[in-house]
Image (tube, rainbow over the protein chains, first blue to last red):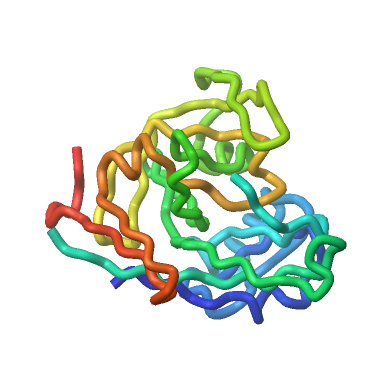
Length: 66
Length: 150
């Protein structure tokens, strides 16, 4: 089974443009901020060695045509 | 072969002039691990039949021990952008412990704003059969029984 978790509620209140480290089980936000290396460092300091990384879109133009 | 269903993710997008009430974008998104030797990086990637290659944000390279200056560069194009430098490197992608496969992946600053990768034709669709059935809110990936593809 390939797991797909709905993380939208976890991300709902985070600032635009933020990199976000989720716990490896994708159940909680471990750290977030503008700088990815810093977000990774904070995640590892908090004991999360394998965070899952995503980003909050910076603009409202979130429609993707890729 | 085993067939794995992947539930679509539904992204609620804010109102814009074109979509004054906002809209919902269905996207087939997977959590994947990028692997380079003993380093790995966990992220999300959209299964994107329109992408020629598997590509990821350039910011991920450092966390995989990859130096953009040492990676081979190709100029790539996306909608609204052309001649975007994309740095290619040989890595592996681990699909949630089900299968790990080698990929000559691109890394581009053009995806840093998105924060997601794209699983494209070369590297993903040429390796796995993929079926999209949005009416069931699901896509399907046919994966060989082997846990590691050389």
